[in-house]
Amino acid sequence: MNNKPIIALDFPGEKEVFEFLNHFDEPLFVKIGMELYMQEGPDIVKKVKDQGHNIFLDLKLHDIPNTVKSAMKGLARLGVDLVNVHAAGGRAMMEGALEGLEAGTAAGKERAALIAVTQLTSTTEQQMQEEQKIILSLQQSVLHYAQVTKQAGLNGVVCSVHEARAIREACGEDFLRVTPGIRMLGGQAHDQKRIATPDGAKQDGSSLIVVGRAITGAANPVVAYQEVCQLWEEK
Ligand code: C5P
Image 1 (tube, rainbow, N blue to C red):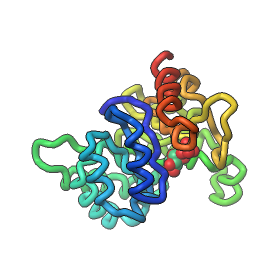
Image 2 (image 1 turned 45 degrees about the horizontal axis):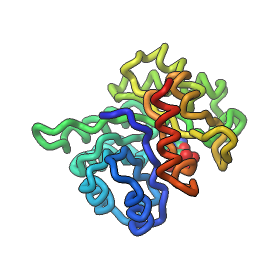
Image 3 (image 1 turned 180 degrees about the vertical axis):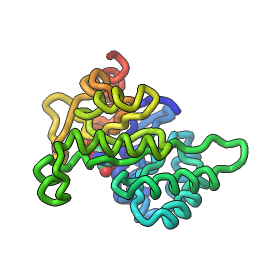
């Protein structure tokens, strides 16, 4: 798997996706999330993959272990590079996800990397404590989820940049820290609460960054992508 910045294709449908992708003349690493997948189904994954792009299929599965295992078996057949579950689903669910993914990966093909969402980057510590009744700091909760994820045998976690360094220290360099909430200096935060720039993310221990609106909402997405790549690669 390469470590190019992952562009979140948060578009309502196929038409907008290809209008966007047609601006680029190089293979990208893109993220297909719920918004697009729920509209277009697995076909959109196949079509984007046919254009030579790497895919992070961000469906954040969270259900009983057997259901997640079966769903992952199906997703593995799509041949994507990276998939995820919610760590809050528990260790047995994460182990089930891994088993399903292995079972569904065609012989001779590389299994997709599997990561777990810790706390959404849109969640604040106050929200987490009041609504989830987790009596820890946000950082402690994220670190705990990362450790359970590692014990379950997964490849890494989705976390904010602010927790990436502590996770690297606790779980090792090879354990992926995939960080959304990336913004350019002076850019709008939108609904994200814990944000960082691409170079800040690298310095603080991210292994992969996910960038959505800072690229997809830019007047010139190709230039915005190049700026993100430059900051990400320089550090
Ligand atoms: O537009 P923006 O850069 O905020 O997009 C971030 C992307 O990362 C969105 O697709 C969002 O669903 C996703 N994501 C996130 N926080 C997580 C996991 C995924 O923002 N913890």
